[in-house]
Amino acid sequence: MLLKFVEEAEFGPGPPINTLFVSLPVDSKEVSLKDSCKWVTKQNAFELLSGVKPCADRVGPLAYIGYLSQSNSLPNKVADSPLLYQEYPPGVTVVPMKSGTIKPFSTTNLVVFSAKKSSSGLSNSGSSIYHADALIMDPGCKIHAQLSDLISSLPGKLLVFVTHHHHDHVEGLSIVQKINPEATLLAHEKTISRIHGNWSGACIGVSGGENIFIGDQQLKVIFAPGHTDGHLALLHVGTNSLIVGDHCVGEGSAVLDVTSGGNMKDYFDTTYKFIDLSPHILIPMHGRMNLWPKRMLCGYLKHRRDREARILKSIENGASSMFDIVSDVYSDVDKKLWIAASSNVRLHVDFLNYQNKLPKGFSVEKFKASCGVAFILRWLCACIKSRLNTPLVAAITIGGSVAITYAMKKK
Ligand SMILES: [Zn+2]
Image (tube, rainbow, N blue to C red):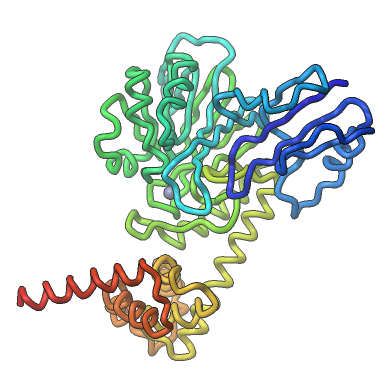
């Protein structure tokens, strides 16, 4: 009997799905498997692949593969592998690495491209065309030993592409530089200006449209603002795979960063731009890749449009402050999430204003004055009223009263 054990890397948010292939029919149950491990016969494997529906979140195993020759040896041997990755489509290697990202995820996908043969070196052969032997995207991991090993295994002529400046995408930059001081950073100028102290080596500012060649693999830089104003994506031309940074996530919806130029109009425009590119595969930096990009992107558009419509309805019904809108539109959502929701509401109201959709009586100035501290105070009162006595609320309440007392003393 030949067993083929396929262990999936940790994309999250759920546990990895491991698969065990057996070359002969399984007629005894002598081997017990872990909960996350599934038996797959040839017929089952065929059905898994042929019967997959657009609503499914994955097609079969696309992961690190280990072989076991005898039935007696259990598949846990494969766990010796120091770092699990997924190479799909061929040429695009995705390594989920532990990072300080936000829940429900705990990893950031590091994407690696490597040339089969070494070229003459990193060069810029005229109008925005770059050549190198390897490229990594978004080294945002916390466990630096893993990153060190990975960088050491890559050719020296290395490009480091960063989609945007958030810490869970750049935390490993200093390690990359330590292992390979000759590496060159490629990012948007706005991102470069925000990466303080993380990188002192060579930098090239890119803004979309540039071509990068890693051996014979072509990558195209796509300007993709919305999550931040300097956000970039990368298209792997040979397989038409779009690596989207934080524009999309494997599960749930992406948050826009209002403090770094996050913008709803840009977010919509970038989503339409992605749809026009008709990618075959969409690779986010958190979670599994998506094999139905159009469905996912249209789903994102619908979700945002629905939210925008609910916010507009709330305003038309008389809501005029941030608190009025959030407490109405997000009434069915845990109050703990209202602070994060308020930043999206702010961006939606800006976008409604841009589209001239706001009713005449609505004052944008008054609305803006009701954001920030004014909103937080009303939110705290609402939390206390509803007796949501979590330690967080208690801490913020204490912090808030200290701040108010301090402010009063200063007057
Ligand atoms: Zn981000």
